[in-house]
Length: 281
Ligand SMILES: Nc1ncnc2c1ncn2[C@@H]1O[C@H](COP(=O)(O)OP(=O)(O)OP(=O)(O)O)[C@@H](O)[C@H]1O
Image (cartoon, rainbow, N blue to C red):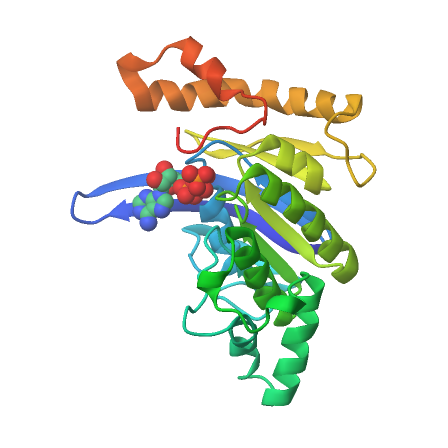
């Protein structure tokens, strides 16, 4: 059953002062199933965050519609929880209070506390409920923000490079955690990343996005058993297939951004061992 439907979505940014406009993408069509783990993968600037923000209701499509079930999205709503790259916790509140914050508007304080504790347990932070954000590592802060989003019980979890700022070990630990949460809760997850390996580890399906003109340039179902092993031949093959399709895109972006400084040797450095497409190329 389709849970999220993205139909003919266009996004154009207008700059009124300079009287210019920039179309990020002009015709995105995508159906996401209930309970599906879908990644949006692509080089910097291709519009992954823009598309996610439109689904979140934080930004408006210039044309086209996004539906959750049969309901057209016009604004943020409790059916969609968002986790960003930076956890954005309230520094004056404890871990528990941060997670309880939104819940208290919906239920009694006791109920909110019970629910917050339940979700903090799910992300393995029971021992830190009384800590303040500055006492936590980056990975722990992201786990709080995941618990905070999940505690509101959204049908859909939208994650915008949630582990982009974390070190490799923490990132890998959180992959296991997100997978566990997804299996436990059955949420539909849309996950933005520019890391090929991360998308193969986590997703049921990977949507590849390209730039200028922006849009979907490929789709890869990931039919590998979980937990996935990056060293398995099937995993490596899929990474290579995605990489091949993306190589041309990345060079296009680099050529445009670096102009005369561009040289293809630099491009090859980007295809490093962790299959990361670079930060802001
Ligand atoms: N408010 C805005 N006004 C004008 N242009 C914008 C605005 N927001 C985004 N853009 C442009 O839209 C394009 C897509 O941006 P977006 O952040 O969605 O890309 P992305 O694929 O998520 O990139 P990254 O991986 O770097 O976050 C970029 O060229 C960006 O400069």
